[in-house]
Image (tube, rainbow over the protein chains, first blue to last red):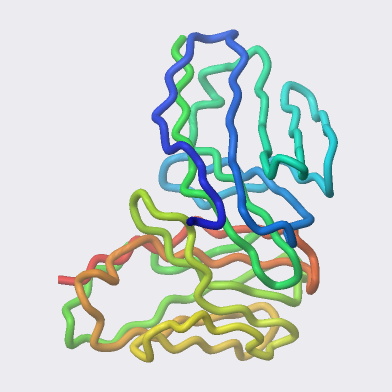
Length: 109
Length: 112
């Protein structure tokens, strides 16, 4: 079983849609959960991070962690064409830093 | 220059060549990382340096050799690579012990 599972997509949505991106994980030692956004030909950039269970909101983005289900989500409201990118989840406990495979998102104008 | 820079951006090399990738960070961080990114695979952590000391080496073949001369610079020396080593090599930095990593744009490596 992979430590982190992420649907690779691609996911295509119309502009203005609510997007839900998800990851599941198996290691209960993970405590910090991150979402990175990677545009084509660029390195990943940190979008949001959360510690332990709960929700965190930043503008149009909401990160959600459910440690009991080992499930994390990133919601994008009012999606824009500029949100088209690959979104990678990541999680860590001490030095072990694990990434998902990334979900490719395309927001259609 | 700001953030994390990597050179070269693209590199094509034969299996018998020796080359080096360079990473420089301008963020005042003291931990640096090398990752390999291949299509449809998660980012693979290769090496971690914290305060210029290597703290992690994830069973990477010896044909990859990292060097961290100071907290701002990181190199990845390559020799006798294989075609399956073709990938995007990403450098990242962070404050030591932090989960926030800042990535460079990567070097697209093709081994022929």
